[in-house]
Length: 91
Image (cartoon, rainbow, N blue to C red; front, side, top):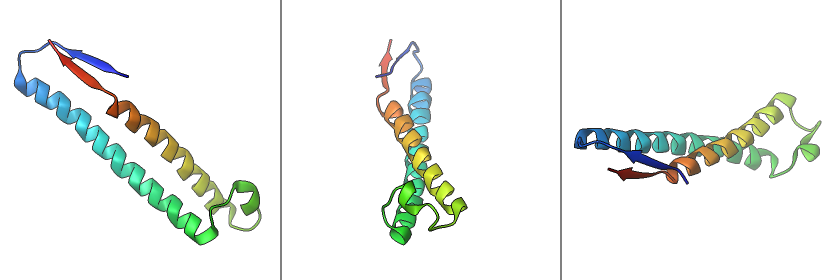
């Protein structure tokens, strides 16, 4: 959990910080959605298999892209979870 303690009397500042966090969450959600669409398209084309079963059956570059998308998806999920856990305490 991440806790941000903000000392300000400015409602504008509060709003801007909350907006920045919300914007980042939205960007991460969009990126995750696009990445998952790419993974889904690959798996619909080749089946939901592992690297060993696909090796030699499909283009190596396509396989690397699929693995990369899976890795990116995991990192995006972690980042999104981190942002969703942020709480702001105003003082």
